[in-house]
Image: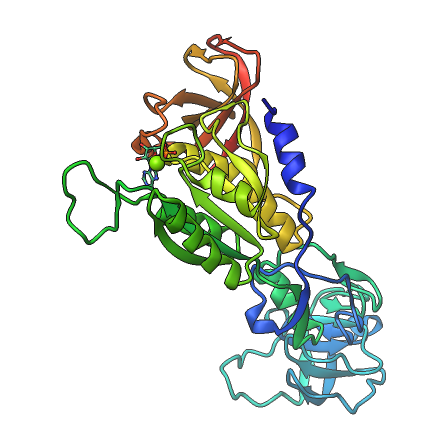
Length: 402
Ligand code: AMP
Ligand code: MG
């Protein structure tokens, strides 16, 4: 049976980033940059004041009074050149006039009219020394034209969009959102909103998985629930193929049950690369292609489906999205209880708290793969490596923070 890392490598080698598209900046949040972005100009673009006050020549600090020869609000271009003994009233962000080399904040002057609309004074005095460069933001101090400020493969954060706007980009080349078809399978499944009858359960995986797909910045196309028949499974897979998706995800029907048709239908219409992974939960996990569309068959048990998504599907969605970094943080946590494992690589639901700067962890409950509440209560998946049967109290293990 394949190890988790072998299975993940096999899967990932079949995917590459989606094509790029150019979108208006306002639609680029959480999209992944398809190109490196060099700054087209310096930032700041011109020397400007970081305070409301008076632009002065630092060498004039010994003079008692300066005459105010200009008023420079933000957004205007100064036309004066300061000569000895002259100052200009200036607002935060306004361009520094020629000749000035410092700004004295209004609070440090004798000019007390600070209400909006107050006219500039004729003269201004202050009684402290000034250093050249004080309260001035120099052209190019933050970014030089040509500097690469954002790299290809970066998922754009809100502040990245702000920076792109500062640099004048109205449009950005990003990767297309991966399109993912999702279907459930099983005769026992009933849609929420419809009353349960004997032997039936609600289809819950499609809600968990659809939200996970969206949370990984991909588009989900919900295909519905396939019955446990070849025809029904084929029918929904065909529907997915017609949608021209980047990946088909199913849940259930890939184990060794008498009505587990998904594997068989995949083999008949494509190929099955593998269908079991040496892990817990989530052993019955299939990968292959259906009519040339990549296919991942997640286990049916709700926790197994989630873990299978986190371990195998999320990395695929990140690769499809063009991301160069991963979204899940792996940390070391210290076990507050003894943990038993069966020797398979295991992903256990746990709560994590911080004590004296150390992550301390405890399981959230019994680890049956149908026990979704224990996943709901968890904020981490502990990673118990293959071959480990017992983790003693106080031992550190790795964990994915959820
Ligand atoms: P299977 O892989 O078909 O043997 O399913 C394994 C277990 O997962 C069974 O208990 C199923 O009832 C359950 N299961 C399968 N699909 C879903 C689903 N969409 N939502 C909730 N439970 C499911
Ligand atoms: Mg089934």
